[in-house]
Amino acid sequence: MIAVTAAEMRALDRWTIEHGTPGHVLMERAGAGATQVLRERLSRTKAPVVIVAGRGNNGGDGFVVARRLKRARVPVEVWLLGRPEEVRGDAARALAAWKRVRGTTHLLVEGELDRLRARLARAAAVVDALFGTGLNAPVEGLAAAVVDAINACGAPVLAVDIASGLSADTGLPLGTAVRATVTATFALPKIGQLVYPGVAHTGLLAVVDIGIPPEAVEAVNPRVTLLEAETLGRLLPPRPRDANKGTFGHVLVIATSRGKTGAGLLAAEAAGRAGAGLTTLAVPATLQPVLEAHVREAMTAALADTGDGAVAAGDEHALGELLAGRTAVVCGPGLGQGASARAFVAAVVRQARVPLVLDADGLNAVAGTNVLAERTGPTVLTPHPGEMARLMGADVPTVQRDRIAAARALARSSGAIVVLKGAHTVVAAPDGTVAISPTGNPGMASGGTGDVLAGMLGGLIAQGLTPFDAAALGVFVHGAAGDAVAARQGEVGLLARDLIAELPATIARLQAAARPDVHPARGYRAGT
Image (tube, rainbow, N blue to C red; front, top):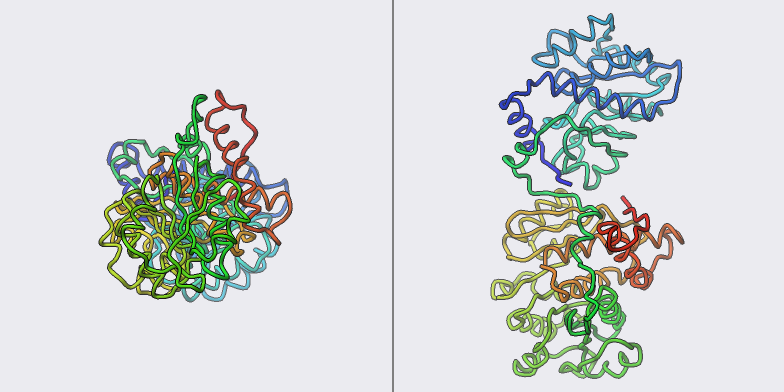
């Protein structure tokens, strides 16, 4: 599903209006859709629905909701933040229509806040129609006090298009923001509703069709999508009946140092569980006997060793032989951050011609260097926010303030696919294309889950997926597997190995949902 910025939504509205649909018709459709969303969730009650409206088009949508509720004999009252003469354009037209059905409007001016609080305390529901996607300044003064009153009232809150005060682009509150129970957003989801903390302010998200034509979307060309099971399930085709292990590629996992042997084991097993035909785990020579006692399906290879369980730089000829014949390379999990490890990673970056997934210490090794500029093959970077900050020469708050902008900037500067991990992981390509994954849960915030993801990406790439498709499918499946485990046993105590065990069934459900004619559907539904 496509998601848009505030500017893109304005462009879609403008295109639609310029091609024959008046603005007041779009407003009427929006209000009708929001009313339907509200009524589907509103039980019969004698208490009123309280609509808090602003002076702009968002308030106009609220006036349409009020009129439609009144006609349906639902008790409703409108509170306007401002004065009627300040309402302009299509919103003024909607306000006039509200007055024609004998609707009354209470003016929210200084001194009336306590009366509003009293009405909110008795409301069956509250409709937030204060500010829309065009808000670009902090909510302050009386408006901020009204938002706080809505949040404190205890009634369910329907946000019209977007929770008032929430940035449509970043998901950050502009000063303060309504925390909605449900949001009826118009035409397409807004990016700020799909990333944190915007997700928490949005509540349940219902998308209302207001008649924006496909031609408008094509003309505006938004570049952000929300990943969906039905689309992703088609990326990994059914396996040929005459396949062999060579059909599905050979992943080389370069990982592990003393004290971090689990990282390589998890990544290697995840590559196999994601479908790779062959996996070789390359580790420092002194650790190879230890790892061989724990792997079954994977092969192992010895790397030059410093003598204390850390990888040594080695020679380029030996590295070339190690890389030969591989379909994808995963480098970094648990590899360590010593000088020799950093030099080894730099050599891998320069020499590997097949797609390379850099994770964990592989990322730390290239941070602050120009090594990625020497890369000739496709690359996937998988940073968490701390690693992302090091790669960008920034700090974590800067990364988290606008995760999409950060991922896009690194993808553009590095030429790599960037997987910025976290709640609703972001995948960005150098051309500006972005995908957001809705799957995953807090139980996955445990050691080793990132190693699993890195191995999965290697396994998917080895089967022929492009790096971007592999990243999109991988983060979705990774999170969906975590959701399946959490649904069965809870979030607390969820381990990386639980994800690995869940991968085949999760992939099968995803394929079945996309191809019910090939696989019997099993009711797959992604976590959100």
